[in-house]
Image (cartoon, rainbow, N blue to C red; front, side, top):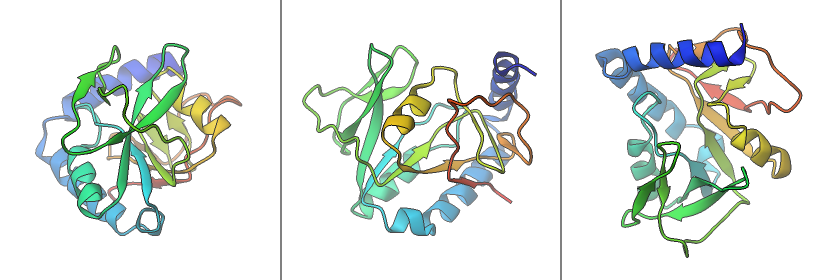
Amino acid sequence: MEKRELRLKQIELLKNFANTKQKAQEDQILLNKLLKLPELLNSQKIGITWSLPIEVSTQGIIEKLWSMGKSVYLPTANSDKTMCFKRYTPDAQLKISKFGVAEVADLSASIENQLDLIIAPGLAFSANGDRLGFGGGYYDRFLEKLPTSTVALANSIMFYPQTQWPVVATDIKIDRIIDPY
């Protein structure tokens, strides 16, 4: 199946799953697993997205990271199709990007691209680290230039035991996939 087709199917599945009790339970399981992860505990500068409703909820994760004294950075997509991470604080103003993703609005916010860990978003993940993103290639390009330890949170709709989509040379694998099982 082509990536575009799978993305559309996956988005539909995730929309149907978004407001279910099972999703809320799995989000909590994933949060608990993440908070025990050595990669997270040993990291100070963490990149993470402010989640969309179809994604694993990250708002609670961001609050917890902040309370643990971690430095939290949200991605910003640039017009040249690159991406950078801006420092997030609880009082930071957020704006919605053209992709519908919340970004730090302050143009003078501290930019940090040498992160210890990135919690990568996506629509689907396979057990061997393959990621089906939203199709812009931002994370693949970022990680190609600035390799960083990566983790992804995959609920039962996002997790595939085997890769079900074409993988190309520019697709960067995720180091660790956390699933609810």
